[in-house]
Image (cartoon, rainbow, N blue to C red; front, top):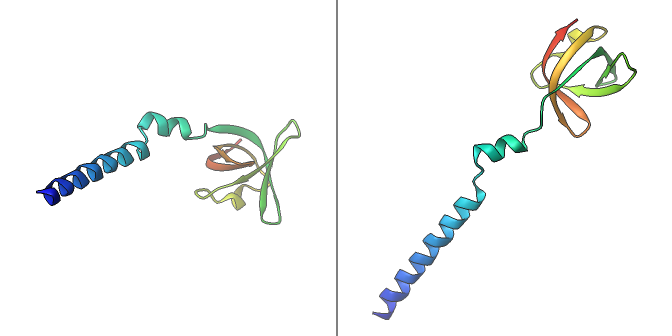
Length: 99
């Protein structure tokens, strides 16, 4: 009887901890949208320095940009509008259009 009670207690405690772990590690959709960086839109001329792409705005400000979805080489030297999200100091481009 002692072993049955001990076994039932261990199972109950294990289930309790499993439920707590699952609840604490899950993000709700509202939390996930708050964690995502906002989109940023910039306008300027794209240049390339070595392997880095730089967007120079008409105000003289520069921003390093990169992209996993857009081939930036075809926009070098052109006036463009880009939209993307910052990761650190680099803006990762989601969309790009020429002006």
